Image 1 (cartoon, rainbow, N blue to C red):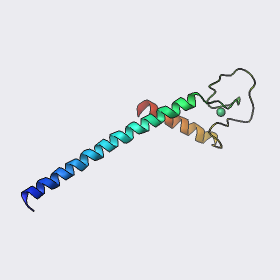
Image 2: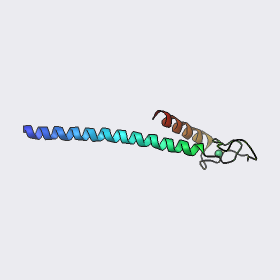
Image 3: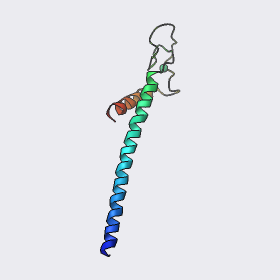
Image 4: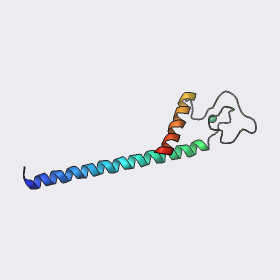
Length: 93
Ligand SMILES: [Zn+2]
């Protein structure tokens, strides 16, 4: 291999490494942004049930029974895990 070929390969390798690192930074920023958007969404959710996971409207007034209906048919454990994951990512990235 010629010296100039080696230099080209070296430069290409370094460029690929920089692009990979920039991509990692971008993915991490997007992950944080998504978590912050979801956290904001959760802060405004309330299905009106007495045991709503979110209760952004507060406790006042008439409330239904039967369990939180936010986030569709998710089981309570799944809803809790999702909320905890979003809060952790929004906090620490
Ligand atoms: Zn709810």
